[in-house]
Image (cartoon, rainbow, N blue to C red):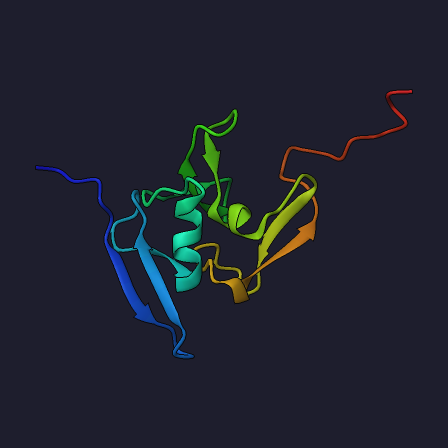
Length: 124
């Protein structure tokens, strides 16, 4: 019988802080890493354990999960955990988008590929 439950590892990082590693649904043997304190919070906000790696082009892979909260049905745990809003993007200090620890994520001004800022003067 097939199960949808991913492999979840509770361990510690090199700095001895508690972390959780969740296996990516579409990449057997690859994991997304979260701080232990973030693990329960996203689940309380509708974040499922079933996560996967989604590609937005060469070198632009992001951890995502399916949701029914908004049109498009995909959300990133990084945005959810950081509370990034419109016009903000989540960046990764070490360049690894599967490292979702708080010390690795930060919010920057910017737009997703294919999107541009609204020109307030164009509507006038």
